[in-house]
Length: 267
Image (cartoon, rainbow, N blue to C red; front, side):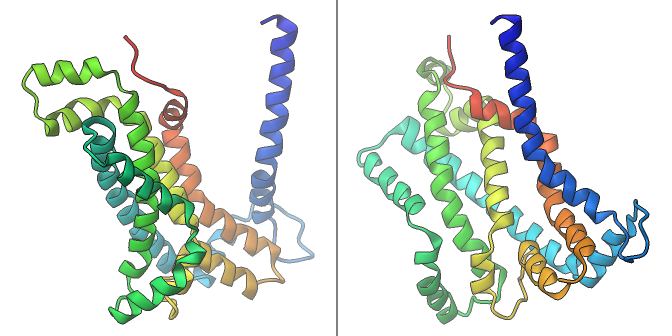
């Protein structure tokens, strides 16, 4: 690639980066404005404390963290095992099982949430963490199985054969050989699942009609309705809700990018 081509590529990437970061930066800057119309000073970090208290975000953030941790961990463990069976062991009928998981990805939650609500309500699970977390776990498991199966199928068979020749069981092949090798793919799944769970609005809204397990994005919507006259506090609340995802991505971006770009293990 010539110098001019590299320069053009850099300019294009910078333009895309600016267009992507501008909304985030503008909301952050707006959140630090004064809430008093006659005060034009900047740097009011107390806006975050005000929004936190008025929106009761301590309760809703706690709900979101509990639900996200449960969904991410449960979906990850189950999808690693199902992905290994379908991608490495490959039993008879494995393709049929895989297509069933694919069907779970294709059916939108809007088509299932109402009958699912009545099923869980008959079991007395509505307005509990299980009514919110279990449906999201099922949705994430479908994607996780698809994702991990693709990773396991792309692993060089010689790696698995060598482990088996050394006397490793299927369980040891999975947890001591393939899992350490597949950390980028696993971290990528963790980030995607966390993002979907954290941002989900419909399932917490329907499954917790009393609002006991309202999540942070839901509370942001209600907070915005109650504070339509204060764009500054709405911006501060939006930053508070988005902060966990941004922090998670900053710390795990290396693994996320590697998981999205790495292919099969090559000799």
